[in-house]
Image 1 (cartoon, one colour):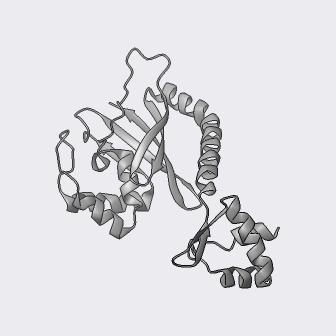
Image 2: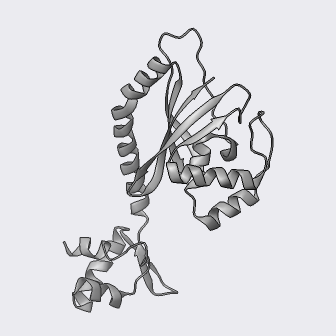
Image 3: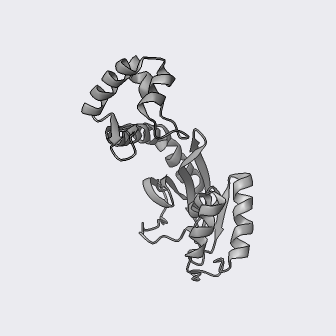
Length: 216
């Protein structure tokens, strides 16, 4: 329980702590705290910066977080798979579930109409333009202002379809609507004749997934 108390000392606001600060937070004497911390250092639950004399959470949490995230995502996919198929069949659209990491997006699952003569799908591309896709605009709409401005500074305003937004002012206005309504719409932006609607999925206030439908 004392070891868990030490782990809980580290937060978003306090990522680095001295031994004395840890000792004060867990209300243990300095020698007891030092012994616990040394054991946690041995098992990589904590790291120590010799130069700054500061402790941080260890690298083991990166691996554990990836395992937990994968398991969590698999459970969500199992939960929504049938619903995505039902929507695809009812409205003759392609449905997609995306994972969001920083300013990149990857498709975790796609469902297409079971009884349609034609099926519409979109190829995954590493340079998928955030400014011209429904899910991409959700990502942009939920970035902090400073981060958003840096991303937009690097945008190449190419025209992919007759509806592609090619100026910053129009896009920023649209992103405000997306942030307010949590719905993003794309019409003829990635190519003529194609449209998409996307909604965000949050976990503890953070954007982690999007769900979208694509159709003509």
